[in-house]
Length: 157
Image 1 (cartoon, rainbow, N blue to C red):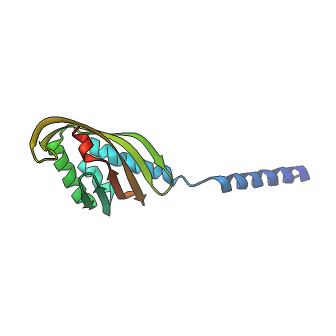
Image 2: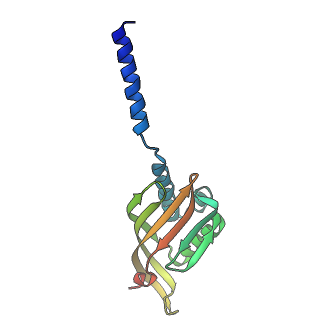
Image 3: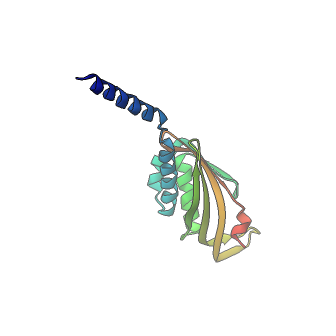
């Protein structure tokens, strides 16, 4: 091999190493994919998917309705409860932001609701629509914490 060949090989090896150092890990894409799958499981009423998406001690909390659920079993029970009162619910993600530590969502919830309103009076087939946001923390491919923030009264306007 000539000196020029050695120099060229050395240059390309250094260039490849420099490019590899600049690459960032792609864990964010994986976290967002888990959060997307979680929302999709809710929209598809897929309680079985929750077993693989939520950590054993994962938390799903909702400040609008003041509840905190732990683990897939409690989240599945809540999904069934929601389905009973809002059989056509749809959770639409309008925007998402990810930073490598958390995934933030802006969303719209729509449904037809039968049950008590905020005063305790029973309503039947009341059309609900409201906006909110969520922060999700994913660890090891599972939801560790999913927190919803919204004004529940705005759904009933």
